[in-house]
Length: 477
Image (cartoon, rainbow, N blue to C red; front, side, top):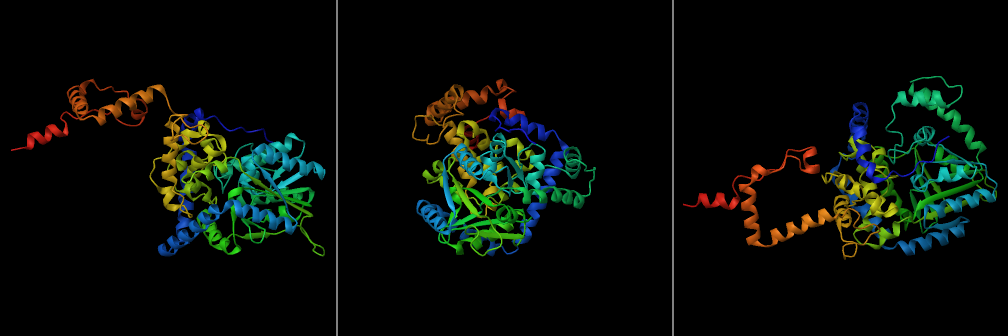
């Protein structure tokens, strides 16, 4: 159905961004969608004091959970095992896919039906299954649309937000046998439902993500709106859940505040349509549910972020997408321009740990540092500060104390190092600074009109005709 989609090299980031910027139609669609989502979020938080208090609570819960992460993960594993859930640990995407494939082959599975899961996108689960001859079908409507189109999600909450109803109408007419072209949204949804309903009954394995994993009870919490998540986790005889190691919380009482923040920040809903609590496989006498439940806990660079006190805040994320919805850069270029599983501000700070800073450092520079992402983050991740940290890491000397990440110094160049070295010398020595500023003011007519990236969207920099010290001298009586 779809071809293997690889992560784009970062040198193509500018080209992909320009492609969207030169597409007025797509620009209009993204701007309209972001304005709509921002308005829905604002409507859910009419009381500013309540919002700030809830953000404080959510941030405290996530910080507490991360501070005790090793203990909570061990507690989660023990409780889930006691509940009959089989827990697996994966350090890399390949290990995660190998675990899932081993389960599938053991139960002789031919089909997997999937609920929405960004971690499964992160590990390229669908392509790993298809390479082994196992069908993997998305059941979330947005995910199904992008899978049918052979694309990646462009938003972590609304995967097909870049598609118009005309795009989807043409896609269904071209790809689904016997389907006529229609732009009626309700009809398109019904077409998708008819196709997917048959898949639930035919699937041998259901795969889901996990929004929160509760250590004290061994409970996997799944937030959704369409009901496909509940179908995926109850109809097939085997359920595989996959999530990052950071999603654990200690107590069940920690979930409601995070759930409230997630649903209201993500889609502007007071609550989502479904909230699933999964604590084990089907028990004797129960009429539904899977015979086996597996949980794959994935690292994939998360321990690198965890090891650094400042970067650890990245793992507080509850995947609501609010930072994307309010980001002026994302609103103009969309998710696909980033070339990573997680786009937008959160993608810029988490992707370096998953893919290496050398492959992702341009994303840290694709920000105005306006602070909108930090202002709306429901769990108070200091995204602008982390972006600055990653910029410094990208420019750091690989052998210096500032270089702590894989790929540090990737943006460092001989020319850039020389320029900043001269700048440091000039600005650290008063006599040299005075001499340099005198020559710059007197030779301002020689200023180049082409000044690299600066003049691509700005007028050239020209030194003032008189220095500040000269102006002050003239004012003296």
